[in-house]
Length: 473
Image 1 (cartoon, rainbow, N blue to C red):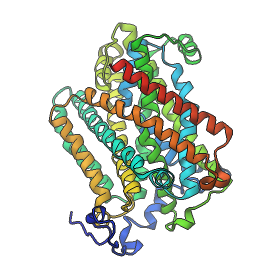
Image 2 (cartoon, rainbow, N blue to C red; image 1 turned 135 degrees about the horizontal axis):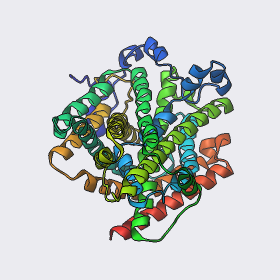
Image 3 (cartoon, rainbow, N blue to C red; image 1 turned 45 degrees about the vertical axis):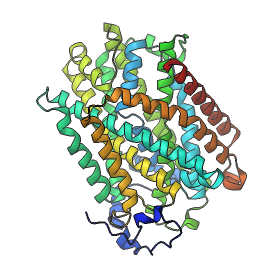
Image 4 (cartoon, rainbow, N blue to C red; image 1 turned 120 degrees about the horizontal axis):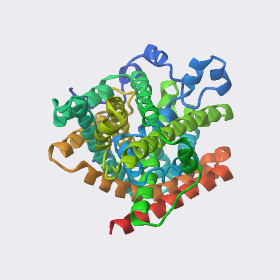
């Protein structure tokens, strides 16, 4: 594809003093058309009334869900599924309580990210840059991109492994890497934002596969309920490592940027192209955004809960305690729970990867463009925004390279966990401070409950980072 540099020359990153050429018209810049946006059925995030949406019945309720649902679903990517399978197989039902415990923390954090975007009309990178020193924000954005790219590689490997499992080994996992990455490129570079959004929403259905596996695993109901509400904590190194892994997987830094950027993109898709049109959010609009975020986080935690239950009921109960990845969990399920559970688990693995990988790559592009100041969104044509899409293509290319070079994805994910574990606490502190700043948030400043929950999340993530370093050493 030939890149037209009139909209955003790459050299602008290296010569910021030069004036940027004028953008093309909106009609030429944007992928798709107004008809595409209407066909997606997606409202502008936080810009619809809950009462108005619910008055349309079930269809209206579904249309109310947007960035929050996609954000929550993308949190359950193949690497996250591997983490939940690992703790379920190793500790049985011992960490089930974390699903309930982390839910309000996730909601508080993602609601704050959405509220900052909806009130300021800007992405998280811009908000951070306006309040804190530029070097701090740049380091955070670069670290986020490194972690996301490693995660992309691991998730691509999981898609290949899922395909190989379903083909009974007739198709090699490496054969599927390039086609999967190419599919992601085509999706993000050529399709309109409305169609990308619609595909993301449909891909969330893949996560219901893990709800179905619970039915197939026949867990002891009373034991499951008891461990859901009663924490069973013991201070062994392995247990602490498992707890840290769960925290790091559920509260991931890339979700902060993706949530905020998605909210801004939704507003732009609704015609609010000027910054002054996006500033400020009404109580009714904010309520709609909160419903979306809460639903998305609840869905995320439900899937996490189901994977742990399935792994505990099938793998742990049969002495399989050394599962290291989602594909190992799928392989172990076949002789123990039957071919249906194996197929459902493997299909879910592929579907979640297809959802999470574009979100991870786009999150890197959004964080860098907001911090470094170049332009681009998933709604823009690639020829006018080459730098934005170059970040996505490079992320996918490096992800393929990680697998082709034979780098162990589990070891790579360990480094991702370290980066995210170190990055998440200071980012949460900075985001919480923005939410409490009346100069930035005015009457949308965080409530006492929001501040308490987000500070608890920041404190727990900080403690988890220290524990991760200690257990690693």
